[in-house]
Image (cartoon, rainbow, N blue to C red; front, side):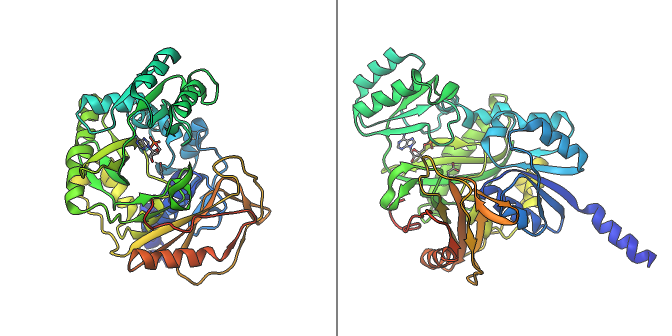
Length: 436
Ligand code: AMP
Ligand code: GLY
């Protein structure tokens, strides 16, 4: 009896409590994966969603992802050994600095390094300073100078609000009138608040987009599997930009030769440039890349976090314990870590609320029938209210499936989506097809 009990205690003593910050599909996937680790006792998710509420080994905590003070207090009270941050807002606001100051481990870049995503002007200046390929650009604070510049460069042209704008701060302007309206809106309207007080006007790059995400420990890079997402709302790559309507991994565009170029021309210079600027980067680093006609990668944007929905197919393919990889990154030992990837392709399709990415209704009941396809439903904008699942966001959930080839994974993910009924909901029919 006694021997048994102490053996059980020994196992428990090694197990750790993890806190995942965020409440989207990416965080559901992170919590699901971390809960599979033999090293994990409980995975808390703040605030989580209707999917994490019922995920085995996972518990929701009613604290907003941006309430850093309450999250630090929770970590102290619940013996949290490691916090993993999903979204950019708390990272840009300095959640890692706050956790470190309180003596808690928190995985992600500190506030100063998270500017790479928090300020597009900072990111552009950084890339120029370190010779990292990106679109030609100029930064403006004043309306007259910005309008003069638009007259000189003409359309098509891309206008970006400097700060975080929840994925809505980028306008791809086909004509000058649209470009001028966007610049006016950002610099004199109040649509983007402080995020729009500075605008970046940049060259419109043509090519194919790839999401390249890696774990970074300050000195080493461990690439995750490649992926692509579909940002446009409608089939054929049409309609307004969204946070992402579906994704798949690996990306057939990322050949070994291209991957080498991405590492040599983008990822390593980015990590080294940050270190040289006194901003050592630890966390997930996401480069949104345009692979232009000459075959070279150019950086469209950096994200200081995992992609959503790219994380969902990427983590479905990860055969290694994610906790072990994050530990290696926090220890500065990613050069000794190996990530094993399932050889199959993974693909996810997002079900969105009618009206998304514009206004949409919340509180719409969602029915999910039992599904035998082996696919996984990762929730995003859902909540459980009195045991009833209802909508609570624009992107509701995604169906993610593995398959022997892209087409096979597609078929399974779409079949799994048939088990979900959301009045007014919609999804793209061509995830994984040509027009990304
Ligand atoms: P960003 O938030 O900067 O990634 O922009 C959102 C999306 O706008 C990107 O994923 C691209 O599809 C598109 N985009 C951004 N910058 C450019 C550019 N310079 N040329 C073409 N497309 C762009
Ligand atoms: N799917 C794009 C992003 O996470 O930024």
